[in-house]
Amino acid sequence: MRITERNLRQIIREELLRESPAGPVMYTGVVLSPGNVRGDQDDLAEITTVAHLRSKIRELGFSPQIPGWKTTLISDIHGHEVLNHHMTITPGALPKGHPLLDRLGESVELTVTGWGVDPDLGAAAWKVEISDPDLLPRSGNPHITAALSDSDVRPVMGSKIKSWKKLDEPFKVLGVIREIRAVVKG
Image (cartoon, rainbow, N blue to C red):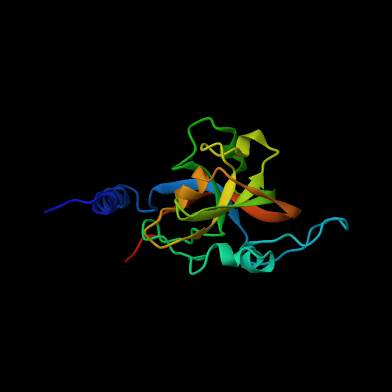
């Protein structure tokens, strides 16, 4: 029997699920809200969330750069949406003593400042500006993966994008600091 990386990950996930019925923490990140909300201040424009983040690709004219690419994808690894959905802070759970542990569930506003596409990687992403150093992703590249050339490309490839186009008008996204656990089936 040939064991692929995908098979090995599945075996590990199943074993971890047996040990922890809630499932292992797959990643910790700022998870975007599913719909639009309005800011509290008059000067704050509508905050863009998952629903509008996908439409921004077309609205800003980026669709021709990613013809036929996926902009929504439910992960077969953990059962959650992975595109236009979150900014990963760290794979897995936050380490003991991390300052964000006390902030789980807190709303966070991020500013999207750029767009990047790397056809060789098969990934496109939104560049995110981080003002809170505790939110800086372990990868050092704050972003929200937006599109993948096909379902075999892993969303983490968005963190490897080096070339970014600055947006003429940055916009806000609203999310919540969360630990995302695998969906327990059955």
